[in-house]
Each structure stands twice: as C-alpha cells, then as structure tokens.
Image 1 (cartoon, rainbow, N blue to C red):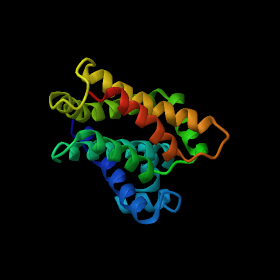
Image 2: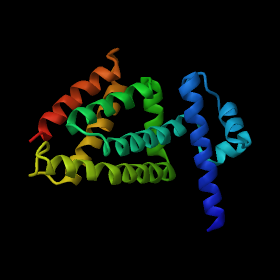
Image 3: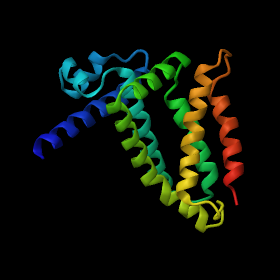
Image 4: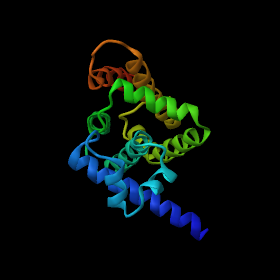
Length: 192
C-alpha cells in the first residue's frame, strides 16, 4: 500500500508542476524536461506515469474540471450560468488544436490503460457534478424528470462528442464557438 501511495504522490507532483508551468508559459512552450525538473523527478520517471505531454493534458483537464465544479458548490446564485462559465473556462484554459485533439483520442482509445484512467477521471468528475445537478433540481432550476446521472452523462457526451466532431472537420471554426452552440442547446434541454 505504501508503494501505491508514493506512486500516486509522484503522479500528483507531476500534474501540479505541469499545471503551474502551463499556466505561466503556455502548453506549447512547456517541455517534459521542465515539468520533470519542477516535480523533482527524472525525465524517465515522467514517462513511467504519462506516455506524453499530450496524455498529461487530458489528466490536467479532468483535474481542472473537478476543482472548478467543486468550487461551484459554495457559490450563491443560479447554477446554469456558472456551469456555462465552467465549460468556457475549460475550453479556453486548455486550448487544443484539431491535430492534438485527434492524437489525444487516438491515444486514449488505443490503450486499455489510458481508457481506464480516463474513465476513472470521469467517475471522479461525476462524483462532484452529481450533487450540483441535484441541487439545481431541488431549487427548480433543472428538470426533475431526468435523473441527475442522465444529465451528467449527457454533459459528457456533449463535451466529448463536440471535441471529436470538431477535430475531424476541415473548417477553421474555433472550438469555443462550437462548444458555445452545443452547450446552449444542452442547457435549453435541461432547464426546468
């Protein structure tokens, strides 16, 4: 058990180092070497936890989303505008090119380990999202005829479905525009 805890702590240090460096320098300018150095690990150790910087960004997106959703629980006021803001923050915080997005999905779908890791992160996100959805249902903001689990699943499908379709298209439409349209329709469907 002690070994597993140490591995999880190392993984967390790498993620925290990457978050700080990406926030300061941007995704493209941040190197694996810098991340490893900031985390206090060897470059080879980085690759024991993440196959690439691209894989790391998927984990970081989930961690960012989990942290931001948790913050929403303590804020007063209507829930839907706060959810919308969260989606736009997520898209803007982690700017993805179409090529990078396709590569991330290819890596995730091409590896059972990556797929399982992604699903664990989604489960963690769902754990913090469900109480908020139920709160929105209790205060009359969100539909009660749809289970909270279904609303959360539809949110994930809207987000990842939009990413996949956007990344395959040849036009130059910005991702934030596409997400805005998708989630405008999503929210219209779940508002009471």
